[in-house]
Length: 355
Image (cartoon, rainbow, N blue to C red; front, side, top):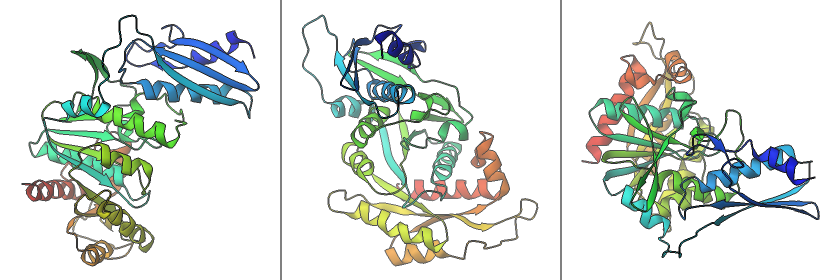
């Protein structure tokens, strides 16, 4: 396949921090090698710490896989084009921790499995904390299923970039009194992020450590479901104070709670669990908030919390409005229905627990 055709494929990859111009137009494609059935693209970056390096490498590889014949091996490399003598490279943690220096509490929102409403709880908890007067940010670390843009009605928006000294920082989206950051802001709608484990870990660290968060009382990190390399990397490289575990009352969900709790209690991680949140604890008709129907079982979360010796921080009812609110980009915690009030109560308990 000729170089011009491959360049056309690469025009799909846009740099959100450069007016949405594509990487070919920006002159970032240093070379293209097509030998022995393998296509290798080398991207050149003018600065040592472009905050979107990992995203652009992943997006470039995704564009190649989408357009090249099936079975074609691909590789994307990143190099630095520096005319001036190279300065001593600072570790990404040293750069990023400067941005987290004014954050009082960094809390992971985790779950042992998917489908329990972890992101719904994270988004609504952030809004509820802001509603109580706290300064809040949320980083969406679920790289394979980022949902924050949809839940907050910020789809299509793109964070800006600002130069501070030698650092180029990402400026988060602000809405509902919360600062939001998600990899979903940098991916085109419907675009799959084809990232291996190490690439996903590095991209996530950039999405948290190289963001201008400013002064925050709480930074919530919506972690991917399950327990794996990404979780361990996040906890080890980010000064996460502890975690909140989300579950539902069903036995199949509760069986995975213990795995999530044990991961945080493992000696190599060693972070406290601030409590358990039982989502979809019961169904409440919006018109009859006093009625409770335990369609997924009763008090499963309370029993699991007691078994694992952690606090049951909150029980969130299932109300039709919570799904509609999320789909419409208006978090339920902003309202006065039973689900919204439950999130405000949860936020108050967490804030009190952390002093």
